[in-house]
Length: 407
Image 1 (cartoon, rainbow, N blue to C red):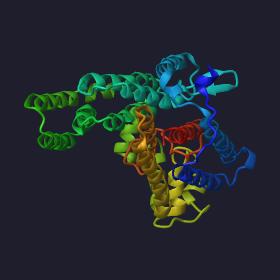
Image 2: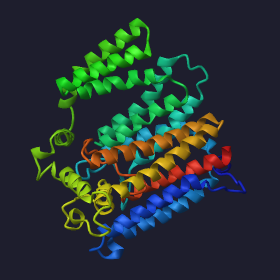
Image 3: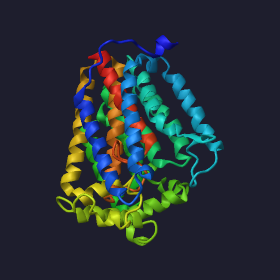
Image 4: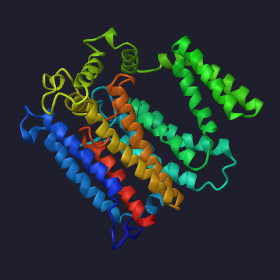
């Protein structure tokens, strides 16, 4: 069994175009956490804890170079079955802040939904790499989304809407990578947009016009176009039903997103302070350690979900651009390397990893400036948090391993 998991490869090459942006982002994280922890004893600060997690993450990256990537292909479905069982087990665990996301055993706790992000990527990559006849479009897309939706529903019920969204979102670029036309992906995503757009009659009309434009330029068969149109109109009528089945805190987040001023000292407080912090930073920021919203503690959750608000306030637009350039460089090289890999499973895995990072940073930034509801998704490599940082480090370690074994 040991030989199936580990390899004894002699030369390990470091792909700096992938690892260097990660190291820079981790350094930025420590700089920001040093700023937010100025009034806290070092050993009790989030900075000290993040340093420990970064060191553990570096060790994990190195250790993962000795793992056989094919092991994840061979046992992908077994890992998926274990994930489903663990997610079900969380419902029998004690509630923490109104959520059941952790499996607890004495002083130890484990959040399976974080590891589940990687497991879902490997499972979908295995399934798609085994498909040699892409003509069965409905079957392949249906099974692919089913593999993502089953754990997504379990995670949503914990409740954790943000992670559930990640599970589904990563399937789109992976399907596109294996050769599915963007039109088919649009058909899958359109009903979700229809449900969201139906909350406003004007927005729904605009969406219908956009949808008709896409159908016109895509030139599907007449019956396909009619079916897509009717299906989306039908899904638009489900908005009230879905709204009534959301959790109360999720309804509050949506309402706060639509109108933060409806409860400026309650549910809208965090997002209003975040927008104020980012806006007050201007072009170059107020300077490290001089963010008033941050250090006067107007900005809650500044170490985790809204750490980019701290970056915007203290380093301004320039600081945010630097972070975006680093993330763009990381994603660009991951996709560039994925194109060079002939192993379909390995290539799809890297695409899934890239999609996970991209969706996380996109939603986190959109949430920070108020153009997306608060979902609790942290910024990769920057937000404080051991479990998520370790997940990201594992992802990078596996990427470097795949490149060593396939390029």
